[in-house]
Image (cartoon, rainbow, N blue to C red):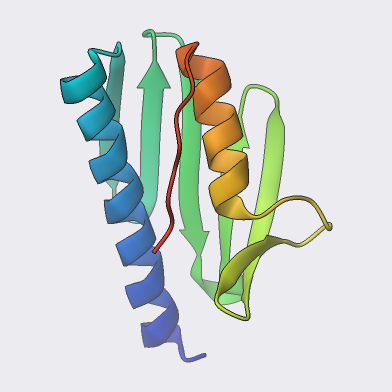
Length: 110
């Protein structure tokens, strides 16, 4: 994949996850805030717990950090796959957002 293709894909993911988080704020009345700074999306739950999703263009990876750990994801066969063999990005995001929000949340990655 070219760098411009990766950046377009990364931008779409960051925008979609931000949109989903903002809809949780509006529709579910969750205490959260989102910010985007370049290729970095930060979601703050309950004013204390941070989840950070960012793109690493040179490696063509998406990196995810939360209080419980950090993960790297590469794009394979249409999915973002954990480089260390864990669960896919959308599943991990759903798991972490559910944990940090205190209620079940589902993240869908385009």
